[in-house]
Amino acid sequence: RRGQRKPQRHWGSIWGDVGLLEGVAGAGLCPDLPPALQGGDDLDPNYVLSSRVRTGRSIKGYTLPPHCSRGERRAVEKLSVEALNSLTGEFKGKYYPLKSMTEQEQQQLIDDHFLFDKPVSPLLLASGMARDWPDARGIW
Image (tube, rainbow, N blue to C red; front, side):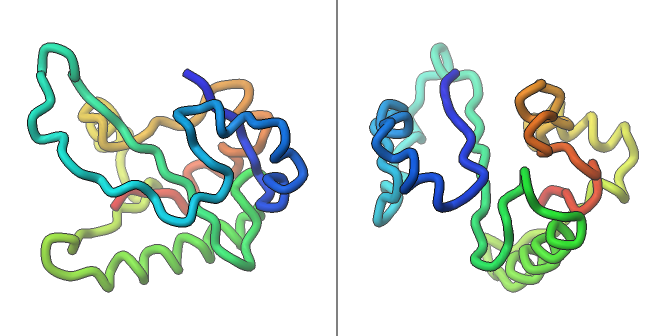
C-alpha cells in the first residue's frame, strides 16, 4: 500500500516537484481526464478476489475533509445527495446516512465490502478524517 494525503488543493503546486504521486501507478498531479474504465469482465477469480475504489471529493468553495467544519461536511453531503438523487436509469440509487443505520446494518455493509469502516489508523485520526463520525457520512 502506498499513497499520500493532500488536504489542500494548492499543495499539489507546492509539493509537485517531490514526485510522490507520479511514483504511484504513474499518476499525474492533475490529469486532464481519467483513463477509461474498460474490461474487467474476464478477470480470473483465482487471482482477483475483490477490488475496491475509494473516492474523494474536491468541490470548489469547500475545504477538504481534514480541515472542513461540521457545517461544511453537512453542506457537501446535502449537495452530493441532491446530485446523486438526480441520476436516472441504471445509475439511479438511494443514499443511506450512517446516522440512521444500526450497527448491525453498518457491519453487514462493511462485511459485504460496500462500506468503509470508521477510520482507525493514527494517520487518518490525526488528520481529522474521523472528526464528528458518523455525522454527514453515508453510502449511496
